[in-house]
Image 1 (cartoon, rainbow, N blue to C red):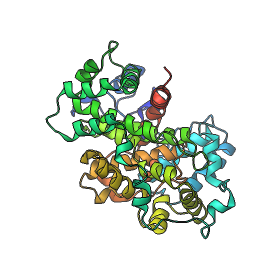
Image 2: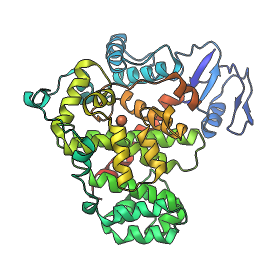
Image 3: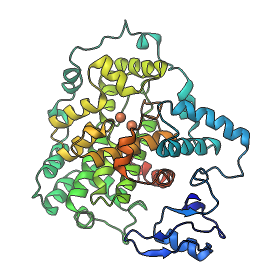
Image 4: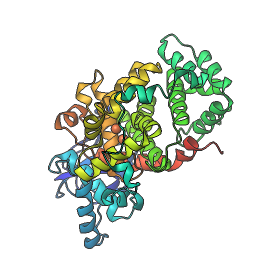
Length: 418
Ligand SMILES: [Fe+2]
Ligand SMILES: [Fe+2]
C-alpha cells in the first residue's frame, strides 16, 4: 500500500485505509474499490491523498506517468540532483521535492532559462565577480537603508502600514487610504476581480473589496503591492526582474495554499509574506548590484546557499537585512517575523508561518519557475518538516495549484496595463 495523490487515483484502485474529510467524517471506507463517483467525492471534499493497496509511496503523487521516456526521466533526475544538493532525498519531504523537480523537468515544464542557470556560470563582467575589486561597504545596513530614505517612499506606503500597525483600524480607514492612490486602487480592483479571488460578482469599489476581504487582509495585500511597486526595477545584470517576481509570487501563492491546509485564518498575510520574502535581496540588488553579483557567483561556484554566503561576505543575510529595513519602514511585526526567519523558521516566534514560507520557497525553486538569485533548493531541516505536520503528497499538489494561479495573476501584479 502507498499514498496516492487524489489527482492520480484511478477507477478500480482499492483503498488501504479509511478516507476522512477535514472534520473527521468518514467519506469512503477501507477496502472499497474506487469508482469514478468515489474519486469525484474525494476531489469535491478536497482530499489530497488516499492510501491505496498494491501501490508504493513512490508512485503516489510523483507526477511521473508511464508515458514518459525513461531517458528523459534519467536526464531529469541528474539535473534535479544538482538542484537539490542539500536535500536528503530519503526523507519523505526531500523525496517529494525531488520528485516534483524531476517530474517538471521530464515533462519539459521547467523554465529552460532557469534550468540553464543551475549549471551556467554568470555572465557578468569579470570585474563584477572579482572579490578583490568589488568594494564591500563596512556598514551594509547604512549603505542599503540610507539610500532608500523613508521620506522618498510614497505616502500611501506609510499610511497602509500605519493602518496595519493599529489593531483598531476600521474598514473605512483602509478604504480611504487606498482610494487616495488611484494607481494602487486600480491595481487592487483588477486583482480582486481576477479569477484568483473568484468573488461571485464584480467589485467596483475599494470599500466593497475591503468589506468582502476584511480590513487587515486588504491592508496586508496593499502593503505587499506597495513593496512590489517600489522595488519593481532590478538591474537586469543581477537578475531578471520578471523572473524574480515569478519566484516571489509563486512562493506567496504556495504559502497561501499551505496556510489553507493548516487552517490558518489570515492566509493573505502568508501570501504577502511569501511575495516579499526576498525583499532583502531586492534591496541589495538595487543598491549594491556589484556586491550582489559577487555573492551570487560565489554561492554558485562554491555550492553554498545564498544566505550563507551573504552572512560570510556581508555579516548579515538578506532575511536579516529585510528585517532591519522593515522595522525602519514600520511594517507590521507579523510580516517582519515571517520574513526575518524564512531561512531559519525554528528561531522565529511564529514558527509555523515562517516554516510555511520556508517550504513555499523550496517548492517554488524545485518547480523551476522564476529565479531570485538562489539556484538550489535551500536545506530543509527535519524538525521544520515535523512542525509543519503535512503530508509529502501536499507538495506536488501545492506546486501544481500555485503554478496555475501564477498564470492567472502574474500580469495583474506586475504590470499596470489592464
Ligand atoms: Fe530568501
Ligand atoms: Fe526565495
